[in-house]
Image 1 (cartoon, one colour):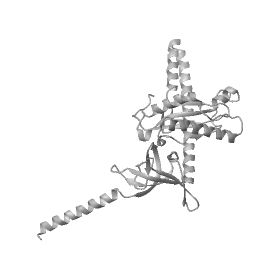
Image 2 (cartoon, helix red, strand yellow):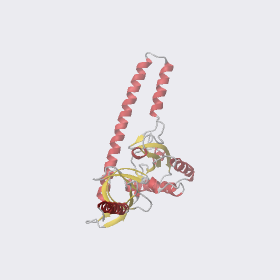
Image 3 (cartoon, one colour):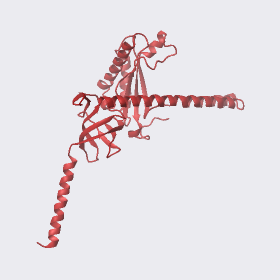
Length: 307
């Protein structure tokens, strides 16, 4: 055989072998461990030792479980709503042609879930308090400025300034890493958890509006008035949130991957001018439903509320 022909044959063989290895790796089941950095619907951003921004794609067939027991040998099926930022997970699946990991299963430890929930709650409370303090300071500065302007300007100009301040305060707020697009509050009779049919059209309209928003999530939080035992009120708030969630899933056709875990808030976050009155108690027997958009994945320029 001539030398040139031998080299060509050798090169062709090597190229064929490389293509075979690449094809096998593409369909190969892989296992990765990492920390969830963000999530929007069926997609998560997971930080691993090899990739700080690995996109993991969830589906209705993805099995989510919590490892239990001393040796973590038992598994408890969990909702996808448990996959929250800050949670350490193990993902098994295959890569697609965009190098996104199509997850067949996601597992995590119970201790890691509690830790992630505690971190998320602490960050939310800290940020919320900081925003309240900043808003209060801004309001005080605006009021002081308005008073100084009142000495120099006409009363009509002062009214215009106050209107501008009020309009700024009324803008949509922000919750953690989400934009708030819309909100519906459902109220309940004392000791009741069944949703009044009059709220169904509002919930369905909210679900339909959410579907037009890129990267949307729906948050449901249930509350109870501070009357009766805290344990009973905790259960009431949980049942109320679950019943509202059922309407969104079953009648509103909201995908499960678009729902955050229903929150049972019990007697926390009491509202109303006098929570001891019947009117104040009625304001606290509620479920608040919000349409959110994740900033990290959806991007700040897509379907963003007009702030």
